[in-house]
Image (cartoon, rainbow, N blue to C red; front, side):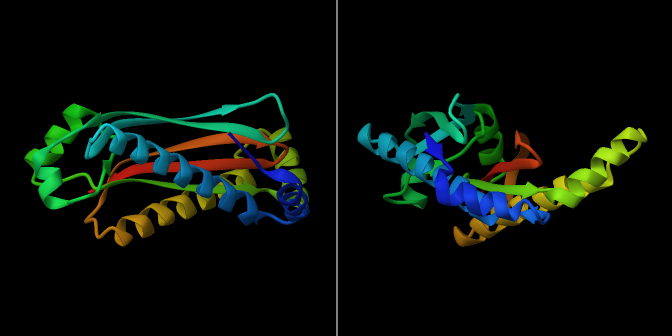
Amino acid sequence: AYSIGVAGHVAGTIRQVGKGEVKSYSDIFNATRERALKRIVADARKVQANAVIGIETTILPFGLHGVQEMVMIGTASTHPLAAQLFPGRVITSDLTAEETWNVAMLIYMPVELVLGTSVYSLGVVGGLRSALQEMKKGEVTALTQMIYGARENSIAKLKAQAMAVQADDVLGVRTYIYQMGGDLIELLAIGTAA
């Protein structure tokens, strides 16, 4: 479970006055996801697995303000080719067993589950504008721009992580949007670097 904390909440609240990324929140959420992924890798090592596939990521809000639990569940497995290509490493992927097989048939190998989180705010002025726009029953441009910016930022984080592990591409990219209350959204992008 993770919490934004008092300092992060104050910084985030002050940041809401302007629109854009609330970096303090994004940093906390990205660090939490990295920690969850490290734990799943440690659990795989305990059972002498060299891969965890089919990882499902779920965010469960608690009743407490700003507290959420990050849950990752996957299937630990062992493959001799993974041991040869990546000795001492645990491969992580959200691809299913069938998808992993199909990727391997295309001579690709999953390397690492990559995640990018961006928390964005419309800001006070943007929130008022979008409320007025919504009354007119048309596209809420400020909200569209906020979601687009959050998505692009999250996907850029995926690409950077894929480059860091020398992957050719990120497969199966999915995005999720979570309403955090007020004018804050969290956008999570997730995929498998291969």
